[in-house]
Amino acid sequence: MQILPYFRADFDNALTMKTFQVVSPIDGSVYLTREYATPTHIESLLSNAQKAQKTWAQVPLDEKAAICRRAVAYFLQHADAIGEELTWQMGRPIVYTPNEIRRGFQERAHYMIEVAPEALADVHVSEKAGFQRFVRRTPLGTVFVVAPWNYPYLTSVNVIIPALMAGNTVILKHAQQTPLCAERYAEAFQEAGLPEGVFQYVHTTHDYVARIIADARINFVAFTGSVSGGHAIQRAASERFIGTGLELGGKDPAYVRADADLASAVENLVDGAMFNSGQSCCGVERIYVHEKLYDDFVHQYADLTKQYILGNPFDSATNLGPMVRTSAATFVREQVREAISQGANALIEPSLFPQNQLNSPYLAPQVLVNVHHKMRIMNEETFGPAVGIMKVKNDEEAIQWMNDSDYGLTASVWTTDVEAALHIGHQVQTGTWFMNRCDYLDPELAWTGLKNSGRGCTLSKLGYESLTQPKSFHLRK
Image (cartoon, rainbow, N blue to C red; front, side, top):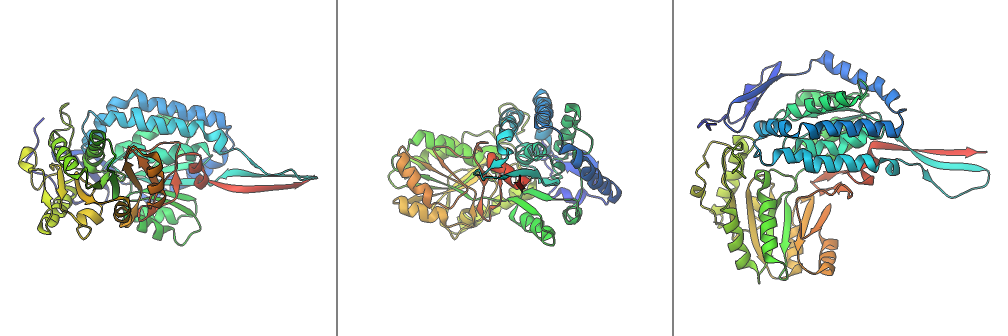
């Protein structure tokens, strides 16, 4: 497959009033065209969801679970085809895309199904003579899920499965870069026997997203995306008393202590920064290394980064694909150039990666040292295969720099001292604190963020809280 020298800087230019196009970052070709939903169709979606929810809420939990398991089985059966579609849509290498289904998607879906009976069980209180008292978790109604392109199945499954298990109906709006993902969900649930109207999807514009949120038939909004997108969702919901779950950006730090296993830290932190071309909300974007290990860490980190193969994502040897679009790669290049102009040193020569091309989504990885927090590369989300590394003297300095951020999604420490990890973790402002791992969501743990990384919680038993309404029963006998 030939990689074309010309790339469209912004696929939005291809939009018309009635259709939109998905421009593949692989070669700049139009991969598919889809129609926007008409106002009449959107009205039908909202009406159908509201009607279906009343019946769906009464379906026994074990029947809901059986349907959801069959839907997951559909995804697993079609993982290779889904992976190929995903590679075309957003550029991740084919050696990885099917695993979004086989690993994280399956793990999260199955956990949220299995934990539902416990998470949705009545909350019983103390015995009181002459009374029966308990709290029941009731469904909200219709949940509107607005999902991103970077991990389109992993991010959406966090809400879709528990929302359905809790008795809600779901309307999914996927990013315009990955519309096939929404369609695959519909196919899976249809094959699984989900009643009509319980799950639906919509291809629509940002303006119509706001209108949908403003509609009284929407009872909760789950959004994953940028900080600016989160503000737009919050504004759209501001006139209504409904909940919003916002999983936004990140500038996730890692701290390598003096007692860290150096080889393990290097291997995992390179992967944590470069996987999916750095297009992960919880990817590692800044690293602080104790001065005793700094020189060795930087040397090994750069050497391992140089071993990446940037190229056609359908080549089995490629482990670094193009970014989602040219404008995204240009943004990263500008951050790197600006940091270098402010005194940073770049350790990776782009010429080592022949496929690296200006004005294209193909971007060589980059590692920067001599960085500081006045540089955007250390304080603004990069969302690309570039990372800055700073030297620190001790834990206190590391904690100071880790907290010097508008974001707080995940953070990690690399050490052999569990007590030190716990002590540091209590002081770092983050939703998830890792020791000796990064860039991973454990479905048994709450997924949440602080500051500009958003609000709300998905996954774990706690993930059911925002998708249900507590209803108290106070019965005098």
